[in-house]
Image 1 (cartoon, rainbow, N blue to C red):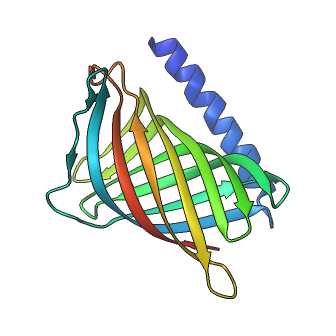
Image 2 (image 1 turned 180 degrees about the vertical axis):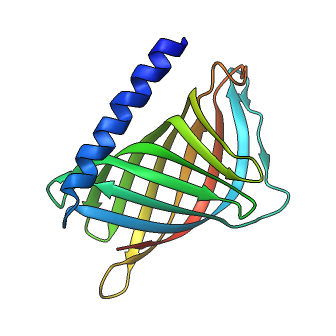
Length: 177
């Protein structure tokens, strides 16, 4: 992706977030998630060549979304922050979420622009995207806590030359406010 396209993408995303920030109201949603990656790998024509994680560790993330639509299915842009304490990344996302009783199905794609801070500080416009699919079950009377599982796919054709798509499987606990 050439420099002009990166700048245009950056300007478009910044304008989008300025519009969203001005309209934040009851349709906004915060998700605080503690994920445990349990499987990472690559898919190829010969099958799954991934491995189970040798060490399980928590990866906290916070997401803010501005949703349009009904309670059953809604969609919209947002911001996602991943942190590993010493290093964090923030990037834009677009999500579609469906509430089916106590079950919540979510599909999102994020990336393109990244802010890294911690031991390594940089702002980057990269051709790197992170589609994420999950299913969760809401618990409790207020239904703000859920447990679930999901998978994140890594699409990075300019940064990493995967022969196939990289992915990470996770289990998580999430609080939705």
